[in-house]
Image 1: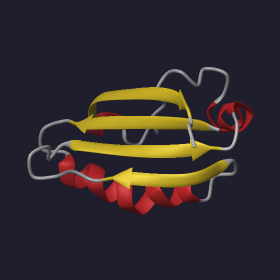
Image 2: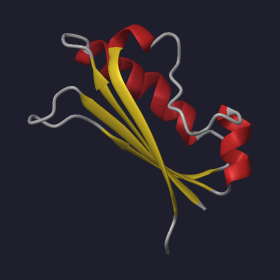
Image 3: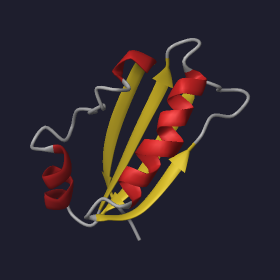
Image 4: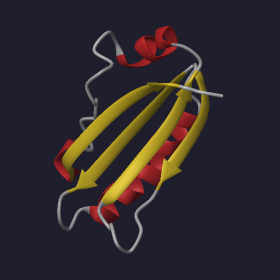
Length: 97
């Protein structure tokens, strides 16, 4: 299994708008994506008000590639959220149970 950690820092003043996208679009999308075993969405805290994240457990690298394509090592972003995001990162790990 693959653990994928996706982190976003919003542009200043875009926290609320990105939050709406995060709760209404991104979380439901990831929860219904084939190949994802578990989704752990992370919302901002008062000491990091512009940071959002997802920890996703995928059943296989093949499932992950089926969702994002062969270029899975780069963070993909929905075009509708691109104007809201200042920085994004993605990391992959082999899940240890």
